[in-house]
Figure 1 (spheres, rainbow, N blue to C red):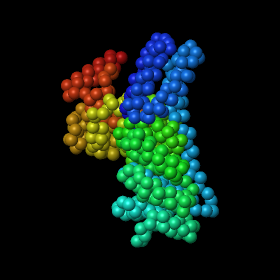
Figure 2 (cartoon, rainbow, N blue to C red; figure 1 turned 180 degrees about the vertical axis):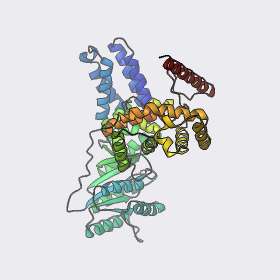
Figure 3 (tube, one colour; figure 1 turned 45 degrees about the vertical axis):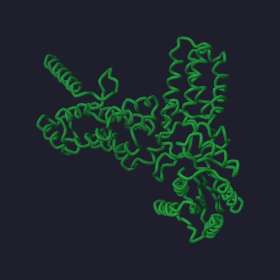
Figure 4 (cartoon, rainbow, N blue to C red; figure 1 turned 90 degrees about the horizontal axis):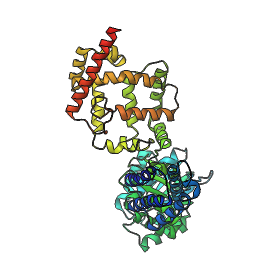
Length: 492
């Protein structure tokens, strides 16, 4: 997500940092790089022009040019303007007590509207509210069946047409049923079209006037770029939207729609879809998104995802063992399995400040396979070997473990050596808060996802995968250093 604009903006701002002294001339040159980066990301032309004008007014001010670190101030100005471009956002759904709140979802076919309806229903249900979804998309034959299946997955009732062909009547009947049963929130999954047309807008307007939804949300596909922005404007003109749900931000979206839609329509993005799963719906935070775009990371979202996806009982057990001074290879394996729940390593790295560039360095690495090889080595050990690998695993045990795991002998040795230092590091984490622990866990995963040396970790390397010869040379060097340390130890 936003990889292209992130790389372009980083290049433009890095050029500014490289200047010994910033002048109005080279400042404008740097801002021109920012302008190009935004246009390449498919941000609306008028939006880019206004954005650069605002940044220029602040960035070319005397206080910035005369400051000790003007380049860093420029980054701060760009960040602030990006936040203003996408926000502010009110994350509350304003659900009232004692009455049924009606939320209407609309959008073009293929935008992910029906799936987003189920995601939003699940989110509301988790707040302790009763929810019903109304299958009012009568244009797409599979839409009703899809909503019913999703309703079963999240255990939410779905009102179906039962032969009725008028979507207005379906919505009216569904709302009446929800009110009769005392259900707090009803979600209307309305019809979409392949493109905006008068028939669609007339149908949605009739539903709006007849049912009177409390809030109307438009679902747009981030992958469609400025088409998504134009759709948002057309729907807003017809219905007066309360918010936008932007889907497929986990894909190859350049980011133009997310950066443009609020400025063009005046309607903020309220939620973002980050996957096909029914729990892959997040509140949209402009400040966090601006941080990701500028490569500053997003630790807050990472921590929130960890709190949702990590096994809290297992986390508590690990905490107790760490406090007691225990950390074994079983603990390390459990830690990596927990971290794996956060999603692809590239996504996780993008949320850690300063680690976004690692995504490109690891692009060609088969990280899942590397981690599975690591698990294979640990699984081939006895319980005693996992608890105390440094003191128990000798050469004969290494041969047995390597044979059982189907790996080279030196891979077992590398894991044992690296675990020794890692154990002390993890014990030092006992008592840290979740946010600090997450930072440390992700740093450790980045370094030790494959402690067999298949990811380059040598001082001065480029982060690319090592060749077989390079690995052999590194092993020879390590063995040589071990022999030297043993001689020095005997001599003392």
